[in-house]
Image 1 (cartoon, rainbow, N blue to C red):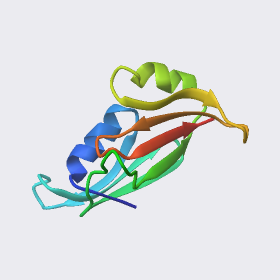
Image 2 (cartoon, rainbow, N blue to C red):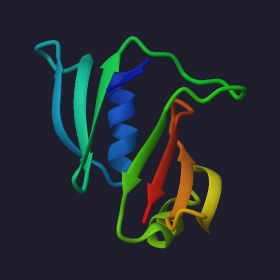
Image 3 (cartoon, rainbow, N blue to C red):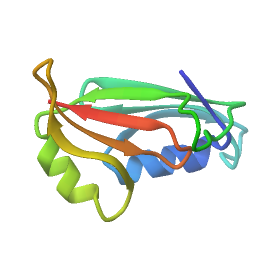
Image 4 (tube, rainbow, N blue to C red):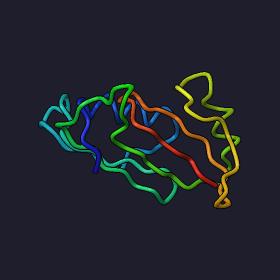
Length: 111
């Protein structure tokens, strides 16, 4: 579970980069999400209220998501999100790209 300052904004940001919304919870009108679940393939992530945005000196969350094609993700998102590291091969055999979300948390897509 990742605590974020604005669950609705976070869910929308993740939805725009390819995550699917599994469930949201909040007030009866739906105007104020307090909790949500999103998925990317088999990976599910939960967001809850009460968190703060990271600053440039620290990164409080490193989310790792497995995918079939890091390069496709990079090409489709490079103009819309902050790229921390372009696609690269790691010493442990993964191909990865690292992005930063709207809360300045890191998302690594690994293949």
